[in-house]
Image (cartoon, rainbow, N blue to C red; front, top):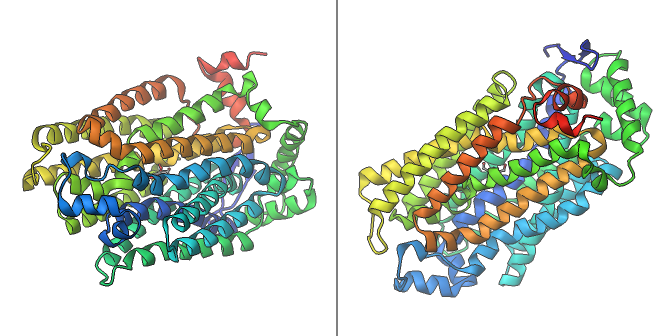
Length: 499
Ligand SMILES: OC[C@H]1O[C@](O)(CO)[C@@H](O)[C@@H]1O
């Protein structure tokens, strides 16, 4: 394994090899992302399967079968159907509140284990569901898993990674989210063809595989040195630090973690502390990045791509495989981010993506506005192709920017004493706005029609301005030195740190 050096607070170097332990731990931990992604990707396809609709949402099934809907844009507008998708995110946002004290008091490892167990039970309930109650109960448990997993995994990854590859390793989480979505899309494509009408059960049951991977991974990995030291296990923390850094003399890094952790221990109420003036910069950035990430409209595509493609007139199979194509683009573009984020930096990726997202959503709005009327049956081939290309253009830019960086930047900018609480607020906000989009999109599509994409365009402009003025570059800055080297140097944020 290649050796290397990370910069420390004195401007000197912390020695750190990229050890096999670091890589394996990160791969195992990031299966939490796989599970999250699978849950995101599976619901869209399942809710477009007639056998599923007939069993749990007979009203929607009848409406589509009889063709009695007034407008194409309103085919799937049903609160219950949206609740099936959104209930998971509602549970996740409540779970996040409990997940934060767990990551702090019990450690990152145990919190990941709890997530795995929630996922397994939720998956079983979903796969054997006999009625809507069981189905929703399963979704709620999966949501608890997402809340615990999304809290613990990004923090785990940021703490275990040597500084110079922290960005890339952290993005493993989001990469796994996108792989999870893609696998779910592929599975839906196959299970939709299974005769007998139980394909949806297979789709929901296969979530058990990533759930087991996360559970086993959480049992195998060591907790992070930061978490061990924070909980007073100094010797164990040092031993793990030696193991993951692959060197004997870890004293400089160890001492810095101990120092920062002593400061952290004096904080009795992390959430109250988070509201202190000096913590305002990472807090404001973390919250707004989540709002923006969701108001790009990404989940309108991720949750409802098959439904959206059907709305604009694609056939069933074309809708499902178009969703697979966007899933592939999502994974490949996240890989671009892994290789660029620690070289090009965070800001370049965020800004470039804003331009690309704006143009693609504008074109989608124009094509739908001009060509998809309430009762037309299909978009002509050329325009349908253009819509798919524009959706891919949009997804690719999201995937190398706001998708992964929405998690990376908050996880690397909160100081240790507020890191768990900060991550918790981050996940909470993300889940809240994911819930809003999941619950509202089909109704918004019905009422706003193509205008929904102009609505998302407007948000892209706002997030572009926010990035230009308020998001600083954090590439290559050691995680415990953000205050001195980033906030104190920033034209706006420095006023929050003056004393
Ligand atoms: O890849 C897209 C996915 O990534 C997320 O933004 C999480 O970072 C999800 O909300 C979305 O479905």
